[in-house]
Each structure stands twice: as structure tokens, then as C-alpha cells.
Image (cartoon, rainbow, N blue to C red):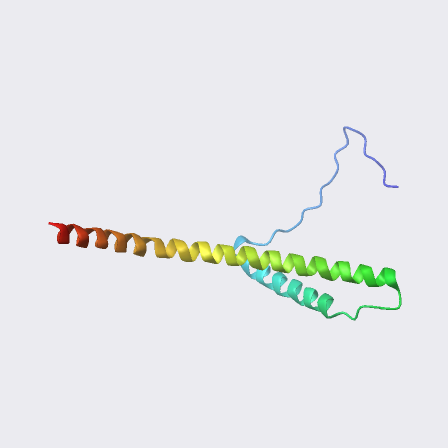
Length: 108
């Protein structure tokens, strides 16, 4: 059992090097790729049928992996659609304004 330091004792803290901010997107892409490889391996695992308890455990792990992947994909698609809608908004507003001007000119 680790020794608990007295209240006034200064305890050294291990310094962990943090990746530079410019490298974080690359690291995220790398770890995402590795994570997807692991998820794929889990989904491709042979599920043991001789032991019902192990069979259920494997199915639960696979179900959690599938749920996580589908949820992540859904959020990514939602963000993509929001960006697409935001990109189209100015164009739609221009069309509405053009149509109003056109109808106003036809009505006069």
C-alpha cells in the first residue's frame, strides 16, 4: 500500500509533456484511425459458441462498439448537414429577396 504523505510534505509531481497544439489534429487522426482498426477487429472476432457466458460477453462488447461507432457517425453527419445548411442560407436569402423584388415589380 502506498505511503500517504504528511499534510505539509511537498510531493513531486510528474510532468507530462503535452503535444504541441499544431500537432493535435494529426494525433487525433492517427488515434482515430487506430481506434477504428481496433473496433473493426472486435467486430470481426469469432464469437465463442461453446460457453454461453463468453458468448454473451462478446456480443455485449460488439454491441457497444457498434453503438459507439453509429453514434459518432450520426453526430458527424449532423455537423456536416448543419455546415451545409449554413452555407446555403445566404443563397436562399438572396433568392427570396430576388423573388420579392420580382413580384413587387410585376404588381406595380
